[in-house]
Image (cartoon, rainbow over the protein chains, first blue to last red):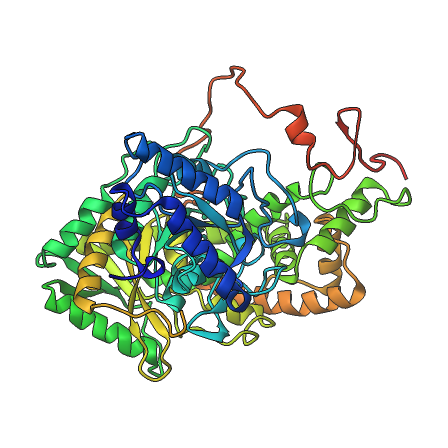
Length: 495
Length: 97
């Protein structure tokens, strides 16, 4: 039998609900794993041991009392990206500005995890305010990739993905604004979904870009991720962008994917989301993935989405504008680290000093870029134009989905890159997001499913599957079929 | 196209309440100029007659009824205040020099 730390969430849930093992025992195993391995990985900013064990005890007691489990993953512990508010642990968003800040309220996502009986192990590391592609922008140090600790685990949600790969948690929650769930999943050999915009509540998700942010599930398998997706998704009256539309049955779709082949399905390869050239491990793995999907009976067609060439430019104009507005609340008047309040500085000056002291370089760059793009002289030509291009990208997707059921692409242009390689060159870092960004602009859904371990570098590669909004089930059906045909993947050596 | 001079960067830093050193303004100016220069690519796109999209959902002004509902307690809201006095946030002087 597989040991607890390397079991799937579904396996653990079944054993806990049969009372073969206790939620406390399982939670303790992962807490011990974190203690033993996080010195090397740095996936966690805060470990909530006592509260997690108390939550586990409540589950165990309820099962003894023959109460009905409140979710299919009842009792399985989980890691939570440190951008969701929690009343019993700090929420730092990876920023010195919020170091030690404890929110007065739980995010809706946090409440859902508690109601579902998932003990929260702790808060995971991220690029500051979810802005970055390597977790190197965290004020508290980067997260290291369990596959090679000289390399990043990706970003902004490197902590959640690394925790899964290092067997520190069986499931995790992340957020995806431009790829921040999918890209770390690809670089760590794990599964991660950006759900349709509006299906996972943003109440208590500290806002980066309000029209792009979306919380989502992370797991080691497509089925684990599907069960978590179901727990997280749903209408929330506290989020004014929350959708009333029905959430598709992603668990049923996953099971269908393992039981049936993909005959009858049309899968599009987007001309503008080309495989990397010159060919690298990502190229090889993607080409192999296409063959696997063809063997499953899917018809592969090429589609053209011409405006995708402008997605990075549009995104890095839209996102900073929203960031400049959303981060204005961090003025150190009501919460956050106040600096320079010594009776010689006015409130304006204290705000400026506190923000300069509390924010990292990338955060400052994006605030300034956004302020610039919204200025009177530049608005039409920069933000306004980008918002029009956003519409064209949405239309490109709509046209592509008239001919196909899902689209596929690599998730990243390379495997995990070395720490320090891109962090001082912002534009190079931005270009890493080329495959993931279009989906966020359109509000659609997409998933990363590991496609293999690269032959030359021995590092994970991911396959991205994209679907129209409110068709998240298609991601899981195709993802599960692909995962099964691909075969088992190992954990990194030493983990 | 868009021109992001060092002076503009300094002004923008002031507008966004970021007190930067001269060295930081130099560094960020260079980096932001590179980024803005990359953005020139959007001018290639013909967007005539294309409506702007600001949010993927079709919703506009999603409001609730204006009824009083339970909210956070004063104590919890003040709990993380950098400084407080008599149940209020204590802040540096707002108005005047």
